[in-house]
Length: 409
Ligand code: MG
Image 1 (cartoon, helix red, strand yellow):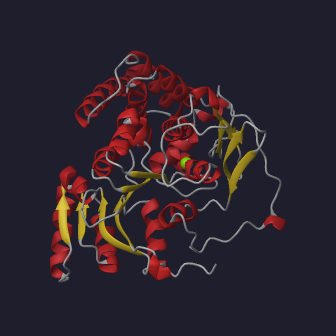
Image 2: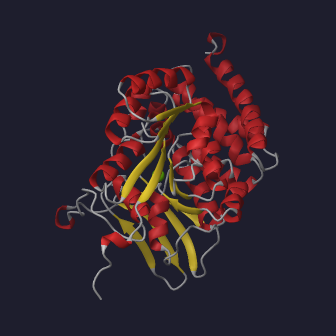
Image 3: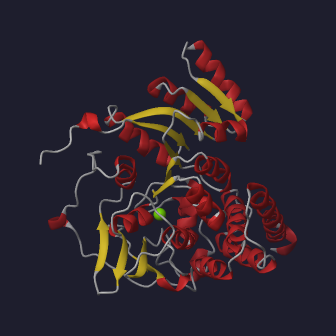
């Protein structure tokens, strides 16, 4: 059989949530390489209106949305003066609106943090094909988010490199269903270990935000870079894997793999272990999900097998990086515990980046907030999720204030 001609494939019409971040950069690089396949209908971001103005000039979206209303006004003035037809929306409503546009079939959900939850839920409610990079839809939304995806016949494809690797190692399916696949024994997520992998505990006291954001392999935003340094990122990914693939906490393992070449493993009952390998470049998982079920060239070189050093794997040090087990604890506790942990961590990481607390305080704040608010019901609506998020943030902020006060140092 000859290959299907390109004209048979639908041109994907995209909304990109988180357009000015690193996932946005990688996605737009792919779009620019394949204009015959992908059209940008809408772009959304937080407040970087200068970068958004340059993206509007380059990709001519029909809509843009910025959370920050002042930034949106500044952007609207630039768009007007340049004579473009792009409509500028603002606020949480504007960002959610571009996730639900009837003319869009695919929504890339790449807004970092709790702020990304509402527009991702909106995309699910509108039955979109969702390419998911926002962890919080699963960590906070959990069963409610997966049920919404199912009820509204949305399609869900993971963009996080580990979960995309697992998806590629599972039997072919057009969506992630949140149900365990028969014959799968375990999912093993790989972790680079971050910039402090071999630091002794005492040295972790002295690390700065700059140290934490200098990741040895991946180039990412500041929040996720700090999460990678504490291993909270891997903990959140364990929770993500639970919801995406229907695996209980006991059947999800984490292994340190500093080279970040193997992006995760799936172990089967018959003794087979499947892995997905590739250069640590986010364009690969994004391209896999964007073009699925096809494969397209996005400028990522294959692995230079003959020039590669030995691939190493070892167990994570759970004492030096307690955030990993906090995530397992929250997952096992169930209910809203994962949402509490996420909120505490967002507050703690922001405080660390502002030099209000030291690196080791992040785990302490997460642990104390989780202990103070462990038996809470799982959110079943955006109002529930927001109320729980605010309650947990208030506790975490109290801990930040105590730890950053000179009286306590
Ligand atoms: Mg990841």
